[in-house]
Length: 382
Image 1 (tube, rainbow, N blue to C red):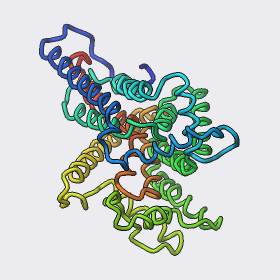
Image 2 (cartoon, rainbow, N blue to C red):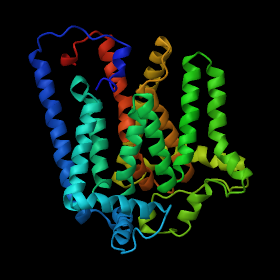
Image 3 (cartoon, helix red, strand yellow):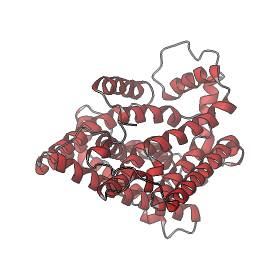
């Protein structure tokens, strides 16, 4: 955990002492909450496909279709579903699906508990937020999916500590982009520009950092136009054109502007980002799950923003811009920008957010750890 606890480079721990009773009670409550999260999630992964609407298993049905094809390995393919089916084929040679899916979720809970250093965080809000995300993930991780392949790829990309590990993680990330989801290449470009901007900001060159962010965001749109591709945000319209009035697409949204060039393409992406990440349009709705999603998304955005602000302030103070937390923040931002280009509805948006769930929570929990250590508290009392 030395590579994860980089917040310890900003503050020093207080000397260990006797753990008081209230701290023991706190640890018991934390253990009880996360035991509930683990058990409820495992049950969801076991029985979810029996009770969830059919739209939750559409991707899994496609993966199973390819798994049943005798020619699965016959030819080279860049199709994401074909290559995802090949990954699951290999997994199912070791573990049957009924075991592999719950085991995957259980491992996810263990990883989250470890990298977030949960027992050192006292405020209940952090545990409720993280537990809510991990439980939500169980819904989308109850069947074989692309997200279950993407999540460990993204996590290693963010958490790799040494330069050698980062090089290998980057190679894996780009390989995943080529063979599974080509739009991850745009995400990688965004990640590089965000990371450069962060380093410029830490070096107190904030204006240049802002210009770098603007250039990085606009670059894919300009390249698409120069190379003669259709506007990037037009893919959202392509998906939604066949889903008009569909009961399974009630949260679908379209581009507000007709795409006539890079300017409208960029404007559509910006509006879509705010519409998805600040979903106030869902709050007046009569359906409770939409209201819950909107409130949860706004709560998450607030905590993530606070974590980023604390992280940048501390990074500027010690002039350090290469830490794992900063990589996590840069990746979450880059991934979020990429989602603004393509996501056709809130359901897809939430499902794909699962990929960046743990890096996002690492940034959120950074603030809790930083506050605790700055105050000189014993971590066991936190």
